[in-house]
Each structure stands twice: as structure tokens, then as C-alpha cells.
Length: 354
Image (cartoon, rainbow, N blue to C red; front, side):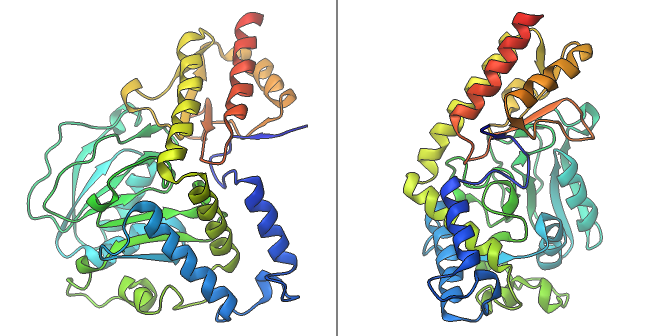
């Protein structure tokens, strides 16, 4: 039976990417050696790293604009720390829109004052705060573009005189934006780009080197830039598979092409959620994410019936995060429209049965 993978992360990957990656694990570039046993300093893997970094900047429209792309480790959770270590001298502004921005604030408070620009915590993060004021003179402003757990997404980004930092872990490469408005972007690969183990950082070089503290080498963006993302042994398989996914995206027509598909998937599912009395959406309509749709049953007694139907249809990974409950359909780039159609059919059948 065909499986329809709505998992929030690690994410679904394109079939052709999985095939190429599996072949490389057995024999990389006809070398007779596995990708995961060759030296990361070998000519073949250095070429992989260079291509992956180049594709990132090309797809984001940031080539020759003063940005560097890095593949690091530690996930977005380490970036909560690294961002503050490298940029926070006295005061930074954070928009609190979910669990991950909450955690980022906690790490930043170890290094300086954090101004909470706005928060939706009182409403269990079911909306994106608006109308907030960004004070002048901040070291940087930090946002989380998409909130995987709660199913919200920032549609409009603030104008600020401070560097703009954004955690894009769960919607990187999914929609067209002017990425030059951001001075630093970071994203765990496992949400929309590759397997767990690699973390993408895209940083404008001229914002670095301006703080007074000494930074440990492993946490210093400038060190990683100087070593071309090879200061320590990289996550070879995760970087290679991310490179394949970026190639796949480029061949699909890039971000603008995949955005159209993503919008169709989101529209199909949200239309069913809104029209079907068996279900109700969690996030405020205007702030809904095109990557992660969160919803609940209006009658919890239907839970076992619904989940039996999901299993029978081959639908996987739909359970909501433990802190929210309900259901969460993660519709990352590689998820085909067909899979969303199967889910909608099951939901429609639930209404007919009811």
C-alpha cells in the first residue's frame, strides 16, 4: 500500500532523492566506497559541500550579495544559542509565536536583555501578533517564520534598523520571499530539506565581528565561514541528501514553482476543514501555515474511527504535537498533491458516516 507521509519532521523527501542517496550509500560516484565511509576532505565530498552551499544562495536569490551559506550541526536548538553568542551585545528583540521562539528567548537571555516584541502565548499560540512596535537600537530582531506545532506562519515581516534574524526551519524553500530582507536565516534540514543531522545557516557577513565577547571556535560563524563549512567533520550524508533535494527543487522550477503547488495543497485541505462539520481548525484563519495545517475533531468520540480510517488509507504522521493534541498535516515540498487528496477523501467520508 502506498504511504502518505504527513510527518512534521524528519520530513518526507522526494523519491528520486531517496533513490540517489541510497545508491551513494552503497557506492559513491563509482568509487567502490560508500558515501558514509569516505573522507570528508576528499575531492568528491568537497565538491558536494560546495555545490550544496552554492545551490542555497542561488535558490534564495542571494548570490553575490554578501551572504555565506553554511551547513552546521546541532539543529535549530544550537542556533538559538549561536545567534545570541555572535550578535547579542546588549539588547535584542524577539517575537514570541510558539515553543521554538520561546526556547530561543531563553537561550538569548543568557547573553543580554531580551525585549519581547509581541506574544501569542496567552492564546496558546494560535495566531501571529500584529501591530507591535520594534524599538530602535536593538542588536537584532528574531522571528520564527513558521510554527510547526501550532500551524501558524508569518505573512508580513517587520521593517527594522537592526539585523533581521529568522528561524525558517519548517518553511525554508517553500514560498517566494525577498530573502535579502533577512541578515541571518537558519533552518534544521529535517523539516523541508533533508534528513536530520545538518543545519543550514545563511548569514550576511557584514553583521559579524561586532561584539566584544570572545566566541568559542565551534560557535563562531566567522570560523565556519573561513573554513568553508568544514571546520569540523560535517554530517556527510545529511549534506549530500540536502544537496540532492536542492537539485530536485531547482529542476522543479525553483521556489516560485513549488510555492504554487504548496498553495494548492493548503487550499484543498483548509477548504475541507472549514466546510466539514466534523473538523475545526486550530490556527486563526489569517495566520494559517501552508506547511503545517492543525485541526481537531469537533466530537472526540470519533477519534478511534477516524484513526482507523487514516491507517486503512495509508496515511502516516498525522497526530498533532503532544502539547496541542488533535491533528497536524505537514505538507512539505515533497508531499504530492495526491496525498492531500487522499486525506481530504477520508475526512469527507467521516462526514458521510456521521
